[in-house]
Figure (cartoon, rainbow, N blue to C red):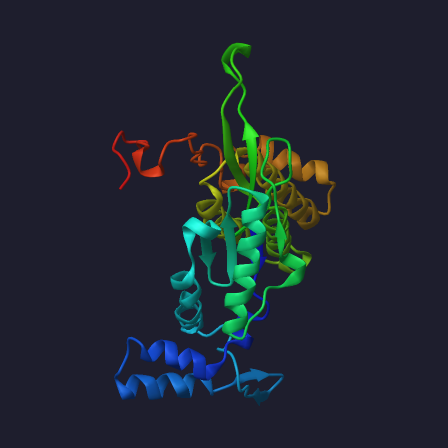
Length: 287
């Protein structure tokens, strides 16, 4: 597995090369003129406008689309049979290969294609990973992927080897940081109901993304952390100990003061079964 990230992708894309890529499919001069204006509009930093001769405005609503249009040239030039399967999402890319030799050739090919586009891989995030049971995995789009072996039923059989996925360490830390921010001391003047609603809003979105995987254990950790932070909020509001806060949310409230429960929300995949073939809770098959 080749894992890489394009260095300063949005800032380094040549404007002229990007417009040439757009003009392969778009001939409307008013649209092309508008795109040129957007690319040269610049960004506001500390009250001053900075205009760059390269790149697309990071944070702009159309920037991800423009970056994909430019990087699509890599997808078109890629030979799956020779260099493996390329999976690219914006500036993050993976190449699945059958051998170490193919992975090294794939990385060299990727460097060459990026150089033709005026780009280069980020060396700190570029590596070749050997996927094997008990070995290290890789992070991609917030998930950590690792090859694991399931336990055989009742101790019989060798189990099934499959690629498991769960929230990466950075994703877990981001969730904790966000919950800590929503339950910070500066928000103690807000009602507990409002704080719980804000935490629930974040957890719903976070869980909706990470529920497709083997994430149940990690969901339990995040739920435990959210309840602990809520207990601290209650304890500080009443100037009592943390144990008092735990008593309020665990014993005096039937639903942890309305805090969302993530139990049962994980949609764990079954090895060698496509997602769309798995029936949902209503018995209907997913489309």
